Length: 287
Image (tube, rainbow, N blue to C red):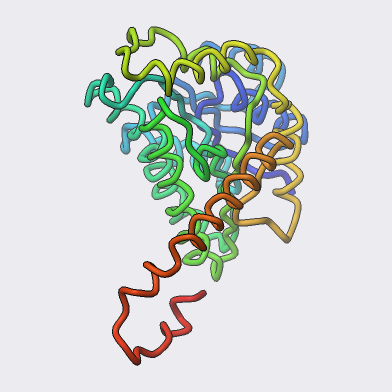
């Protein structure tokens, strides 16, 4: 049966490719974007199977309206893709509180708002897929990207917990963790950076140069990612987290190995803080 999708941030980049892949598969799409005119070519091609909606994900009422548009237009909602997000490279000390908050609101609370709006519909249906387009930045960190990492780590924890809550309703939650994708994300994240304070040049300067050097040569193919998401909606077995890209896999493996080494190094302090004779943590907390 054809599915109904709601995709945030679908005006360009990966979100646009996901919308195209879903439509090409014969499904219907509510395409959320700040500028719906960007979606006019898809409307011309697919007609009534795509419904553009103006969606600012930081607005909870707008998220509710987008979900309602799916139900009113197509009768149901089968797939939610939380894709909207952006980054901004700057030292934490040099970033305004407003800029920091805006990134967290978009990349984390935008996910919360649309997910909260979609859940009652999917729960009544006893089925649904929720894909959170996160990043390996939700597992690892680099300097100069503090609000983005804060938001993406929050998305991972939120989604891991949510997946356990809603599994009995037939709803599958999957956090996608890509590495570099060949979109305009990195270029936009480097736009209008502040002049680095000299003290931060050694830690953040090389990161900015690296991002510029690999721009347009990222390993991740957004169209392949989009097609993979469509395939996952047809699968009965969906991972809670899915790393995307060889570069992402290597970075995660090296980071996790380093963390394991650090944990071993400081194990003597870890075990020094417990009461003598305490019993093991209840099994429930190990699930």
